Length: 599
Image 1 (spheres, helix red, strand yellow):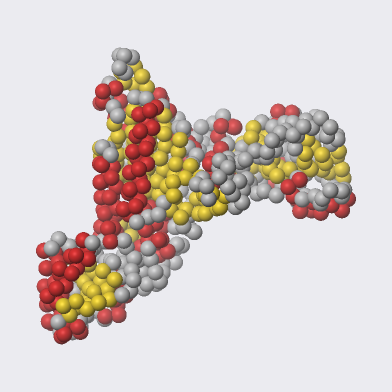
Image 2 (cartoon, one colour):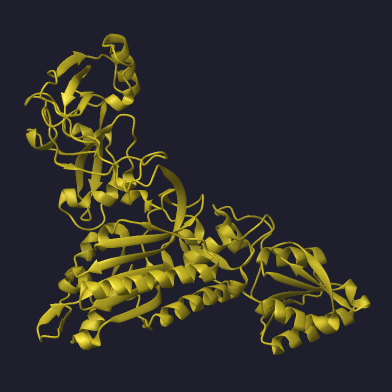
């Protein structure tokens, strides 16, 4: 196929669009691959669709290779299946809901677990039908509060989602591993470095979950690795818990005047001045910082939660969001934010800057001891026997020597603070290093959550009904396009890997003589005859500088220039990645290019 720039629906941009925040967003807009339709929503133009199709083809080939079969569901879905799994409520404000003319409720699908489950329930009823894996490549919709970074975080995006159906857990394990290996092959063929990391299952549920993260400084996910091979999203990292300590001989806690000490820094300074230690100085790690948060439930309700953490650590809201649902006895996505002054006013027992578990029934407002009961969760480092300096719930006063397990209790333990470089890996494989990454894929062992909710059962070998066990596996297709640009670019434009580029050859005719365009046209036809896709810049009144600039911006890996060298019987073949070029005789160039593309 020959795509001629003189007629191709394409306009490149010389300047970066004002709304573009990251490199992939800027370059995909400037090179004419996508256009913004609304915040987080993009139209795909001809060149963009060609790249998208090549990415999808690789995904389909690898999914088909493990025996998965492709289906296609609607994006507009009825409410009832999502009510059955409670996700109509659990998704909260994260989905697009709408009504038809008869006032029936629908949603734009954020994901399709329910529909896959019901389809299999409709058609299969025996263990003999299993194992089964189905997949689709379909548009999904999420009502992102802050869509950003172009295709990396949008309201509309394309995903490959697949689901496995097995009669038992051993079968699920096999299906999971098949998908895992397929994902590694997909990303390898795309030329995307990914690191599989342990992850939390979140609202999806299930017993095992892994993310495939592409290392990138602009990634929204933080993950950790150790030299010994441990890798996990920070949300899934578990703290190495210190041993419980004997507190039988610990001195009694004491409330002290600590005027003007509403911050950890001022408290430590005061402690070192007024209550100096003989063995060492007080540090922030000796203090218990009690952070008041608001958990916004899927129903929209706001619930105050207090989290106690060592004073030298900052809370990580994403980690708390990933782990708090079970402590509040809710399912679904819970968002967490810092409490406002208005939130604090509703609970006068919370004295800002001096909040603590309290030393007496009169001052206790946290956990099950409090008369004004607020859920009190603590970091895993707060173990029985540890001693803390913390607020006394009285302005200008702190408690010194408050012993966990003796003087105060808590409602639960939650992974809640930032994971630091140098923290120990939970498997003992050494200190952790932190990195950032873009989530390219996520796989889950769902188990029986959706099958039970939707009554997906089949007859087993003994003729008894048994609930099917499921796995869920997703790849961000449009996100993959953006990630490829993030990792394959220079200051001139995109550097597409050959197997996803919109064309095999970018042919440029430069010069004023008719013989140049005739030779370029002939070469384009010959390359087409050899099965190559050619992007041919046949524009006659466009300067060579503009043509070369567009070629470098668009990013096809091989640029062929028919120009002044034609007089000497050669054309120039440029490698976009290395910037090198060579002159190839006209009569040899078609074969040379075919060998180059096939290599």
